[in-house]
Image: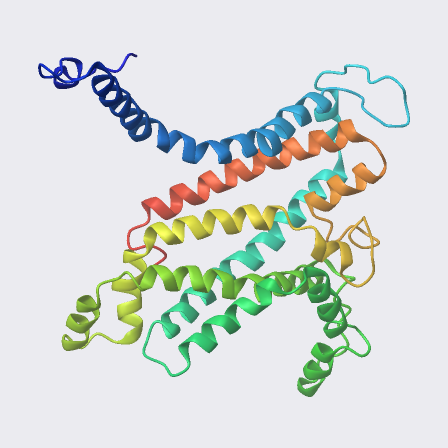
Length: 324
């Protein structure tokens, strides 16, 4: 759409040189282009990068999932939805789906509750607030490989510190990486340790924007700290809670390093696949060079993420008072 040039620029006063009039028109056009085009220019790099490294791989993976695609063969015949039909009948796939959901629930729900509580504590006047806030972020910047290796030692059956502490209460040696429930709990604790502080800082940033007058009025009315958290803080930071719930759900569905390195390096998540997640199942088939089947698993995981994130979004948006 052509930009309309104001009459005061198109028609210069008598005696004004033609060059000055043209420069004025040119400056006006540049100004209009800057005002209307700059916002699109600012966001363009993100969409270009997303198209190259996000949208294109997503579409190409869908194309690969419709083929019998393996690097061991010269041809990749088109098989349609055969990979998905095989996948839906694969017990290993549903086992990995159950493990992913179980670990996701065990790690996400306590993690978010603990993060809100820690943020609430740091939102009060404390000495050395900066030190405590930086300390919360340290687990997140630690190498995930180092975290898993250390926690694997802590959860060791014979010489692990966790079993040593449990022995004080008469509990025998627990083989954490051999059972379904025990391995899920151990991996969930690793995830919680790594991400709780990070989410707590996000909640803390939202709490900083809550008007202090609300807390002062509640204190005058005799409301306790827990009541203020339930009735003031959580409802006021509800949009942030929705955001953290969705991002945590996505992260829980993509867990890979923890089950891959827990105890011993294994692609199957234990001898009985007791803690193999969807991401690890994809990696197992990728290592087998069965790219068509791995792509089908990837797309099924993408569908699960969208559905679960949507359910979480609806629940958190419709619930009155946040997570009360």
